[in-house]
Image 1 (cartoon, one colour):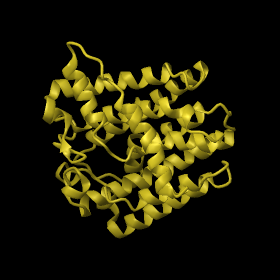
Image 2 (tube, helix red, strand yellow):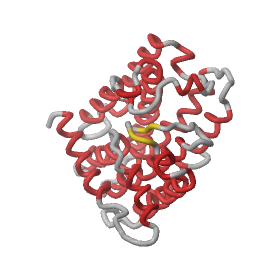
Image 3 (tube, one colour):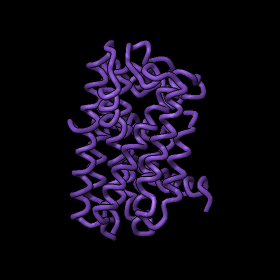
Length: 294
């Protein structure tokens, strides 16, 4: 199957599952509306696709990881809602639409994010597609990525360091936490869901792949904030410079950033080569993200 067909097949599984979430009725309808508004706003769904495809690379099937894939996307959506809030990045556009707090108000957006984070762990813990033991391990994997050794730590440094000139080590640390941590969780969730136990070598390879993929993804993101347009990107451009943030683009310039994206992509591809049954899709995914336009 060609890469794009394979990607769309995995994407369709996730979209179908997410579309059935938070449809219940009650006096909290507006909260559910806000959750669905952000969760179903589109996007590439890179994290859930990674979960599905790492599971498939290990056991030959995506199905065991479908609940975990939905959970990681719920948690990712929560992080985007909170990142966009006025007290954080204060962005008004996300994926070409008004951000959650612009559409629903700040307090409701805050609660929608909180509820999506809780729903993510509920989805993992109650999955019938994997074993109860795997569900427990999955919750631990996702919690580590989300907390003070992952996204929250990265977001803290990102905000605390605004207006400061950072060196490459500090900037890399921010994005290993803020960006790579959840990508790593997605890959490891796929392995955790598999009925076939991953070897230590496979686990370590998934971690290396995600770390390199995350840095390539972030560097490309910083480039797009300079060279893209709001229409193409689906969100404002130049916000990093406006907020006084050091980025890979401001530190290195666009030409060197292009080289670094290619280098981290190559390392990601090499890290999984020969470790799993079939790594063609995962290798192609890394390559496609290196050249993305949004």
